[in-house]
Image (cartoon, helix red, strand yellow):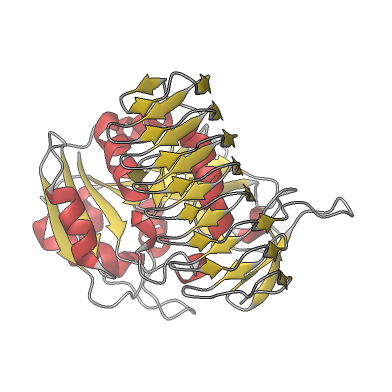
Length: 395
């Protein structure tokens, strides 16, 4: 099945993590998010991949050009991000006149459910949620087939939402020229609606699904992926270090004496841990990341080159590329009133739904010694602090 993977967007809701990185290229347990989507698609039955790129397109191309995935990978450019139907339209000239699958490049799908989508075409992936009004909700006929989709309804017709995974009939290639929605975008949901009017479209239930749309959801994505890793030690590990459970230490990584790592954890190539550091929870340390003496890192993502030098605590946080935390930097990750942590997305305060959430840092953030960072704080790329400063608001 030819498969279109949408990876053109910038991901404004993911800022500051996407200031210089396209959202689909954010790291999830050693692989960019979009690579995980592509590999899942191939495992499900994709015979050819059409990647639609746009923002920072060269970064996506270079990454996939270096991979051997066993199936052809072609690229199409969506020069202006004008919606999902417009994105597929950018790849349409390269598609055969045959059924095709469309997947978002910034979503995690479980592979078995994705395989069922390929087998059931025409079909759309579905997922049950407690708050369907926040999503596109599927209208289901008595036989379980899809009658249509309603975007963010106040009175949802079901608790079954659209996952953005579609297996379209070949005829849908002629339906991509849809009118703009109220958001000013050409939407694939309009193409799905027409498919429902012309075919019996199956609602394929997904066992697991995660839309990685906001910064803290990158933590959830890594928690998912790290929960599936097997222990593998290829790097240089001191005999005085203790590694418990599923831990990956890539070739070129170094784990020094006195270190304790409690998996699941992934130490990527060139990363250094210790001496006398403690890494636990679902933690990913990116290429060249450094965790120094007497540092504790818990359930966090440190992107390439991020450094937590010594005598610091980082919990439930995402640190961008080349971040440098000064000695004694401490991250708060829990509200004392027991409520879930709130954070700012596109200027609005939102409930993250996470009882524990530390800080989100863009690239090249630098904290001075003894900085205290409050739960839910976001530091934009290049932000700095002063010695002994307590940061309680976004910067």
